[in-house]
Amino acid sequence: MVKLQIDHLTKHYWLERENRDVLALADVSFSVEDGEFMAVVGPSGCGKTSMLNIVAGLLPYEEGSVAIDGKRIAGPGIDRAVVFQHSSLLPWRTIAGNVRYGMELQKRFDEATMKERADYFIKLVGLTGFERHYPSELSGGMQQRVNLARALAADPVVLLMDEPFAALDAQTREFMQAELLKIWTKAKKTVVFITHQINEAIYLADRVVVMSARPGRVKDVFAVPFERPRSLSLKREPRFLELEDSVWKLIEEESDKLGMVAAV
Amino acid sequence: MKTETLAQPRIKADASGRPHQSFYQKHESTILGGFAVLVVVGIWQAIWSYTTWISPLFFSGPSAIAKQFWISLTQGNLLADLAFSGKNFTIGFGIALVSGVVVGVIVGWYRRVRMIADPFLNALYAAPRIAMMPLIIIWFGIGMWSKVFIVFLSAFFPILVNTVAGIRNMDRDLLRAARSFCASDWQIFKTLAIPGSVPFILTGVRQGVAVGLIGVVVGEMLGSSEGIGFMVAYGGQTFQTDTLFVGFVIIAFAGIVLTSITERLERRFSRWRPER
Image 1 (cartoon, rainbow over the protein chains, first blue to last red):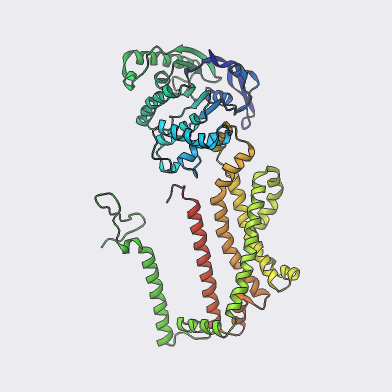
Image 2: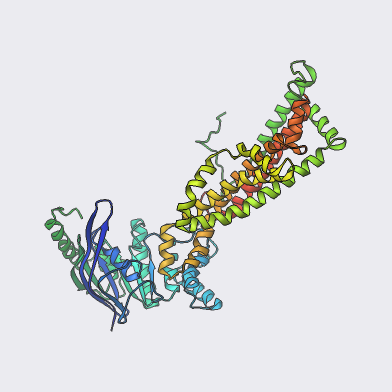
């Protein structure tokens, strides 16, 4: 069953400084199945974040359509929650307060349910014992766990993740990827995961959308053939590296065409 | 012995990792600071008592100031002056605090209001408002309300301008996150704009206390028959150098107390800040 359907989505920007129109997304179409983990990978400037913002309802769009369960998206909704690249936690709220924040704004749950859900998701992301800490007392990886717990606690139908691990160091990122898969297995959400890292996309996702740069187009959509659960060592297996390499070539091709000589 | 500098603080820790501190180390700044004050006052007193370097017309000594303080307190008007100044400051500052925060929140939140108000605010914030004192005396007379008004006028603008800055300083990432959770404007105002501007408001309060104190003293100097400012002005006109010093000490003490209260408040409300 199709959960999220993106059809011929085109997005223009007006660049004030250069006084010209920029095509950010050109005729983007793909769909995400219910419960599916979909990764969108592409070089910086391919409009993938714009696309996620449109799906989140944070950015208006005119051409094409974006729909969840057949209902056109026009603004933010309780059926979606975003995990941002910057953890964007309220610095004056404790971890527990931050995890509650999304639920509080949406007013869907009563006080007791909010408390229960906050506790559950804090436990799920492995932050039990840190409820009363402030975000500034946590490491980057832990802050992103809070970010994730806040989104999950709001009980979205589709979870949108905007390069959530991009700002983390390499080791923490690997660990968080494995952790995310564990959490995803339990939370059973449809996920759209934006990244510029090919191996991150392949490791996490059921299917991967490869996008090209300027304007963002869908270059390819393919299913990841690896069985779950996936261990981190999968990333070092030849079949994984082969797949990663072929995606690299797709993107490289595109860059060559633009005369960027593989400098993605 | 190696001297500790800002660049090389001394850090000792025991095996448990908890910094080991003696009573002296814990209170080092208080002890050193207090000791320095005692030494300076002691030397001053020694010079005052045992030499003739200090002319009582131009300067005073600690014992003379203390004596004058006691005389003013028991036989003079010191208590009444203190109450008068204290009342002027408290009322003026209270009005400035409430109205500064309220107006600041409105100006910060509504873009168009800000555009209209900005030129006036910038002009009045930058101008030394104490220069309006003669005008204020024409308006309010030399009774307490001219003093209340100058304190209000002095403290209002720093509080207002800082509140506006605090509301406007809203983090774009936080705003985006709130919007993604379907936050209404009112929710954004309540959960982001107000809590985020508290540290700014307190900075405004600290600045407001400082200029409000100047306001009350100078206000009383320029046109009054009561108050600490009047006491200092009168002491100057009649060459009562000791009385002048009593006034200075009281004003300085009030400044220290009020500043430390606001600093405490600032610390209380910014527990979540990383630098501690």
